[in-house]
Structure formats: C-alpha cells, structure tokens
Image 1: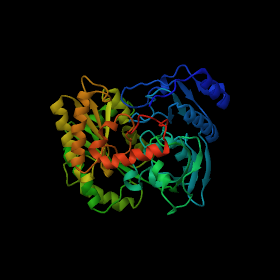
Image 2: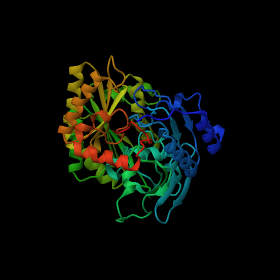
Image 3: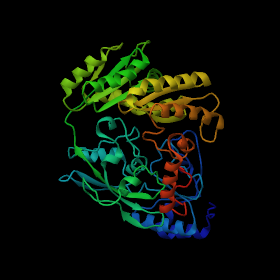
Image 4: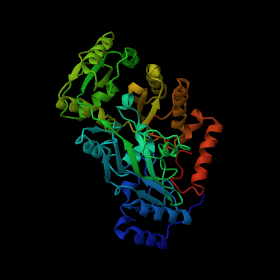
Length: 460
C-alpha cells in the first residue's frame, strides 16, 4: 500500500478541525517511540483531538485521502503498537481524559480512552469500588491502551484481564463512523460480540473513544508476603502447589534473583535483605479469607527450600515490596535488558519455561532475567545481548526468538499474554497460528479497514 504524502492542505484541514495548537509538526521525539526496546519512528504530524467527534472528522479525512493513522495512548506499550512505522498521523487520545460517570447502583463506570488507570482506581476507591486490571504501568497507562492490548497485571490471576470488565465501547471506525459496540449489561447474547473483537485489536480496527467498564466492591483489607526460594525451579513449582490447596491469592508474582537485586540496588529507599543463596522470590497477596488462606500458603511453601518470609501487613510495608515489582521492568531495562518477551504457558510448565530460557541464553551468550505473573503462567523474559539491543529487523536475534517461541508452543503456551503483538512480535505469529487462522484474522481486518489506514504494519 502506497500512502499519500502529507501536504500543507492536509495540515490546514487538521488545524481547522481541532485548532492549530493541537497540530504538532516539530519536536515529535516523544511520539516517535514507546517503551519497546530502543526503536524510533517519526510521524509526519501529531494530532490531539479532545472528542470522539473530532477524531471522527480526522479519521474520515485520512480514510478519504489515504493517510496512515497510528492511534496512541500513553506510550507505555512493549510491542511497538504505538510506533508510526508508516509515518503519517499519530492520533493521541491524551485529551480524552474524563471519567464521565460512576454508576454505583449498577457497578459500572464510563470513561474516555485517555483516562489513566491509576486515576480511575483512585476515583473508584473514594466510593469503595474497585477496577481490578492493573498493569505495571498503571500510574501512566491509559484505559484505551489497556483495552487495545487486553492488559492484565498482577491481580489477573484472581480477577481476570481487561476483557472481562469491558461491557461496551464507543469506537471510531476506519471510515470515520462512530458506533457503540454492545450494551451496558452484564449479559449480552445479541448478535456477534463486536465489543470483545475490539478488545486486544491494538488500534488496527478502529479507535476506542469511550468505554463502559464493570467494577466491583473494593476489598476491605489485604496482606502481601515476599517468599525467598533457594532453588529457582522450586519457586516455579510452588505456584501450582499453592493452587492445589484450593486457596485463591489475588496475586502471585515471580522475580528472579537478578531482577530483585537490580531493583533493590536502584531503589535506595528499599532496604530488604536478600541472602546470597536465594535464586527467586514469590510475591503473594490475599484480600479475602486472609488468615486461613495465608496459613495454608505458608504451610505449602514451607515444604520447599525457602528463606525467611517477609510479611507486609501495614500499608508502608506493602508499598515497599510492591515498589520493587512495579519498577522492576524499568530498572532491568536501564541495566541493559532492552528486549522483553511476554511468554505465557500453563502454570504447571513454568519451571520448564524458565529452564529452557536459561539454556537458550547460555547457548547464545546473552543474559536473561525472568519475572512476572506466575499465578497465571505469564512470565516476562528480559534479554541483555552484548551485540543486539533490539529484536526488530535483526535476523540473527529473530532466529533465537523463534526457538524460544517454538519451546513455548510445545509447552502449550503462546507468545503474548498481555503486551500484544504490535510490531515486534508479528514475525512469530505463524508459530502459534495455522494458515487458516491467520487468513481469517486478516480477512476481518480487510473488511473493517479496507484501505489499511488504521495502525498499518501492526499484528499482520
């Protein structure tokens, strides 16, 4: 597809539609990258509309004039979904940042796509309500971006991922039409489920502008514990053992020794002793039936070779250990682990995944560190290669990742649990999908976006 080159006439249309202050053509560095590796692609223009109607006018114009549009949230994505690889228009939803309604009677909230996850959490907490999906980037990531990638987070093991909380979506389609996808109801068996089709579509089918989300009562209390393991693989095996007891922790997070050491060294305010022979930690939280479930959990993990368990009972202690987990991705990236994979396997296969990853690193002379959501089998694999700092368009490194993803496939897993496919993972889709499956997905894309203007070059 050959797209139209942006002209002064195009810029004049955009300025007339959303005001000249919302049309940027200089100093675009921040919009040329996201949190993916060390990649940079510059758009021709950045647009900042503040309503669905303005987005509709922009998209309709781009559709008619064959201008590529890259929707953008907060830029916290890790698969290159917000990178404008075809140039053209970056359409930022940062001004659509209003919480429109908190419906306490029906346990629903209506928000615009640019609302920050953390800000929504805070507003709901004032009314003793709770929105469970909380990706590590929750203090900056937008709800629209969370929907685009079907984000999860630590609490997904108990409460589920974004898709389980999306009731209805307002979407601007690639031709500029604005439609609501579903209904504001807990059950809906009326026609095809277009709402869920758009969850996880990474901006390739349209732009989410509003969402109606399900919320739940806020848990009254919670406790977190940090459990050190002297054997890396026992930490993985302990995860399944915990669930076999029938308890329901709200989080089960895994951090290898290299990850937790990097975080503690970087965060001067964190003073947690780690014995030299500790190879991994599990960070586990409970927010219901705390005393019996906590006791059963401690009894279970005590069957393994563990160190002293740290109990975080007050808010300051909980904040201290959770700061490590929330910041670990950023910190290990600063330490040179620039390439991140988002593998997910059945949790009983976690130890096999970690073992295979370390073997692959040893065979190919790079460093690796694993951390993530062990409770649902979703491990983030960070790689520090002495030569390659990006995986995108690096054939030598792509061959290594193909080996990894074939291992993941053989372990009955898949290549992304919550980050999406975006730009950097699309090469590997044939490993996990058949030709028929991929053809069906591509046909849906062509039907909804026949001119391929919406986030072109992503997923497929």
